[in-house]
Image 1 (spheres, helix red, strand yellow):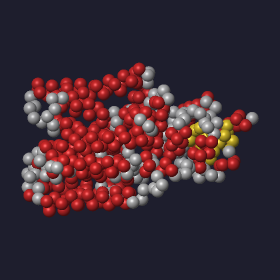
Image 2 (cartoon, rainbow, N blue to C red):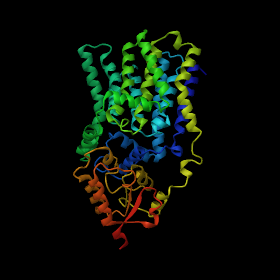
Image 3 (cartoon, rainbow, N blue to C red):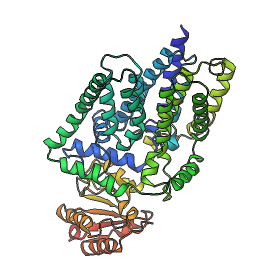
Image 4 (tube, rainbow, N blue to C red):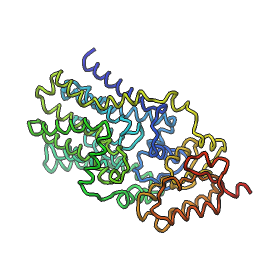
Length: 494
């Protein structure tokens, strides 16, 4: 067996093992993932994104979850995720090998360790993990020699845009490099632009055509674009954002890998990398990996979602790829020095992975007794619209487990806490109560009293008045719902 095949097999094995640690048996619970799964359920039952549920992500994540549902639910999505990561890993390995990086397995394995880090990635199924895969494939295609290169780059750019818009900022330096390097006469630039645009339009037409066909284009525009620019972006100073990023980076296994990679990239730039323009693009992409944290301001506000750092899973390995391939000095080719450098890059990531692997639940999640609330609601044999989980996004999992639809499109309630002025005219909360009345929803799990601090007291008062008027507490189980309360429709007992 050649060294190349041996390294490739090692890389594939590592990728599969790390993916297995996040299979549905050991899935990490996170409310965003439950919301994405629910969106797949809505599409499966004939609903349309944005029209029949509210979320502010671009639509590709919903279609991924729908495809996963068709392939078997949780296992289906895991297969899709694992296949994408493995495919990107193999393509990246071949790129490293083609550019004569002596130990071609190091960077693909680093990519896998970072994208599977449980504290940052939350397992599988998150949007920024998929954009990381698309960006990695973009760079591999960009440095390849395919006759369809620009078309493929346009398609991959569209996949990033329609999966997570802010990640286009991370892609932008590589996109600029792809367009403006090489022959830059106006005819070549025009040809590149037209081919990139054509590739982008292939995806855009499919997505927009879907919403036009379902008369939901306005919903798509309002929720996935207008909302994000109007509400989700917060203006904080650069210094405040940098401090928060530094503080939260310290809590992750990415810290040492990030700093070592930045130092290696800067020294390589100063002391003679043969791919200086590409190295500048890679360094810029690493810095832009923090754009989501800067735009949202959520780290400053105390919401410690280090998931915002996930783009580093692709930008750091790509930075090191440019360093290794463009700097052939002894440090990057001798076994002892490379082994030391690899240990420094891997040590925290490997230790974090080992700690996670040693604490996997036994027995697996699927054989653990179901939570009481799920058991109780399952006994009711509920149909669509008969249960509403109010003001707790974690409870969206109930819809998924029971395979039922919520009576209201508003399943994501954090905005009543996050944003001053949100729903000031009570229009949204009134639409929720109107839907509950329309569908004669039997049960409401209410979490409005559990550390849910409304920015608008009128919303809280209106909601409580509605519950008292049309519902009554289910006394027999109320005390078992932690901080939530179960309410039953009054008319159901009459």
